[in-house]
Image (cartoon, rainbow, N blue to C red):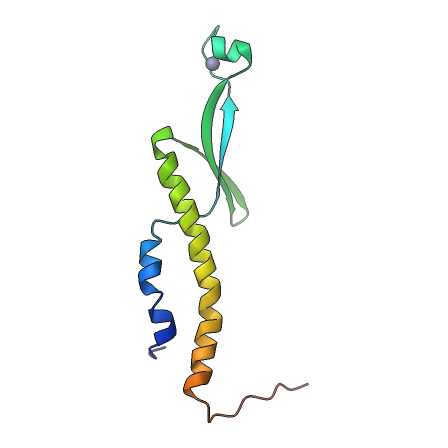
Amino acid sequence: MNRSFKTTKKWQSQFQVLWPALKGSLAKVRKPCIRKNCPACARGDKHPAWMLSFTHRGRRYCFYVPLELVPAIRRAYQNGRRLEDLLYRVGPALIKEFRRQRPESPRPHPKS
Ligand SMILES: [Zn+2]
C-alpha cells in the first residue's frame, strides 16, 4: 500500500515515544531462599522478588526481574497498554479517511 494516510501519520511520533513496550504482567512475589537458618525465611517473610510473566503462542513464560529494572519494566508495560490502545484506533481511522477521500465511490452492497 503506497497511499499516504494523514490521519495516522499524526500518530507516528506517539508510536516512537511509546518504545520500549512490552506485554505481560509484573507481579511481586515472596520466595524462600536456599540459605540454612535464614531469619527472614524462618519468620515466614521470605524474600520479595519481581516476576514478569506472560503466555505467548500457548507457552507460559516467567522471568525474574532485577529490582533495578522494575521501573523500566513497569514503564514498558504501560507503554504496551498505550500502544495497544493506539493500534485499535488505526483501523477505524484508515477506513474513515479512505471514505472521506473517495466520497464519489459507491459503497459496496453486502450480499445477503
Ligand atoms: Zn531466606
